[in-house]
Image 1 (cartoon, rainbow, N blue to C red):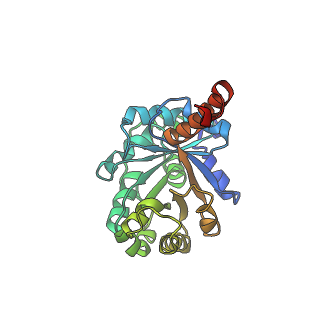
Image 2 (image 1 turned 180 degrees about the horizontal axis):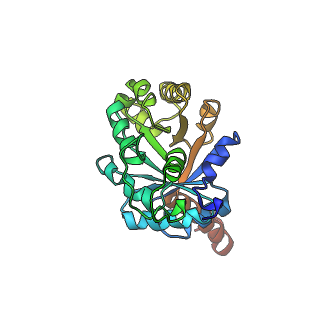
Image 3 (image 1 turned 60 degrees about the vertical axis):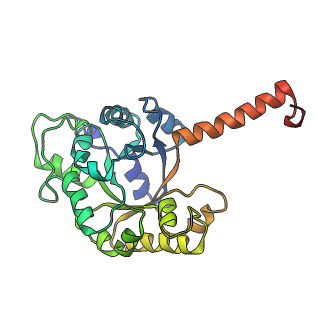
Length: 270
């Protein structure tokens, strides 16, 4: 087994170099081509969303397997009540598992349990483990490598999670906190306005707490030119840059506007 096959994580490599790792969301286009498109565009990780979209575990596995071959790290967000499937997704190519709406340390401990091999968690050996080179038998060195390189990511996006972010961040075995800025602002009564001062303060509190406990810290839901500068200096190490269907819609609108202007004349003349 060559060294390069042991869990190469482009996302972690970027973070270790001090860069911000930028991610692409996969929600409606579960194609094995998506990781190649992401890599070509410059993204280093994928946010494969099984919480809000109709993707199956098989869809996720195919995307993850493809991602491993092109230097993109696939993270899979499961439904809160499906977090037990985290081990299966990790066995089939996921580079990490994101648990949504983590409310307290007990939730974070449950996440870690399914994501990490003993002695850190209770994940069982038995899957193909493609990022470990499809080993036939367990080995302590391989399980240690997997525990170090796979990510157990707690998503903080509720008032309850915000109130308990200290205990969440202190959970042994947890690798990262990912802040869902939009849902957090909704719970704060701000209707999704991530530029509101109280939303910015809440997100900043999550980020500083995560960093204090030595966790990686990520951000989702902040995309606009007005909002981005408010969050730039909070220490985020991985940031979601958008999701497939929204980026596709935006690009399609821009293209059709260009085509209409060329072929039909300015919009005012339609």
